[in-house]
Image (cartoon, rainbow, N blue to C red; front, top):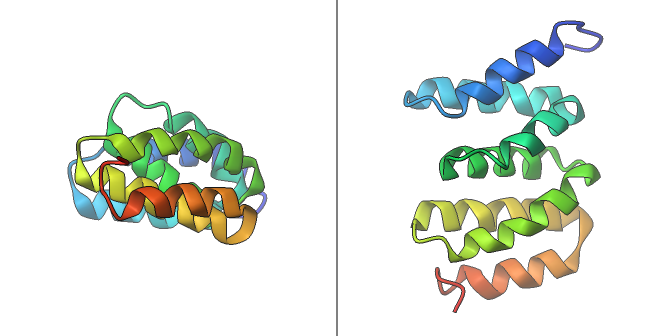
Length: 122
């Protein structure tokens, strides 16, 4: 994948597949996006603004797994997802914040930990 001139288009296709209803397609997209690593970060950051909450969470989770410091500032607003009514989205937000926290910030850890036990943030 290194030096692949087609990488931006391939990354875009994998990001688009995060919205797919087929779990196998989504899992494959997640694997490839993690392999692209830092090169996928700008498009994953953009996907954090997707209208569908599950796509935002998948993108955030992958950003957390990649661990690129550029993603840290983008993932901080995920704390807002800790209040989301969908439990899966709340869990995903906590997981993404914790993944980034491991390498980057005790503040993220305390925010995620404070909300993880309640499921509602209150």
